[in-house]
Image 1 (cartoon, helix red, strand yellow):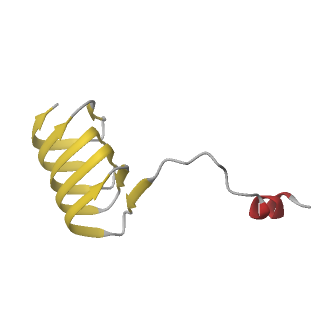
Image 2: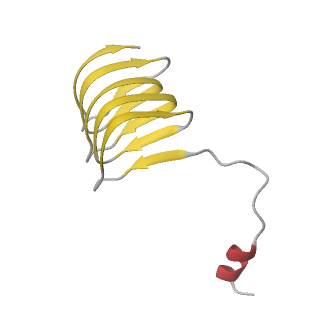
Length: 102
């Protein structure tokens, strides 16, 4: 059996893998997004985000939103409001114009 067929026929792991939602660089989302998992944004987003996990704003992202999350990490452009329970971080490529409570 070659390696690729072994990967296709392997039984699912009993260990759950963490979920990450993605808004890719070619996508635009407007509205309210709620998730208990992590969210990565590489495209455009306008609206509200409620996330129990982490919100990562990628380098190619343009976000105008109100965010409530466990952690917020920004590497792209962000405008709006941020409320996070734990960690708030702006990476060197990040640009933020927001009110922040962390």
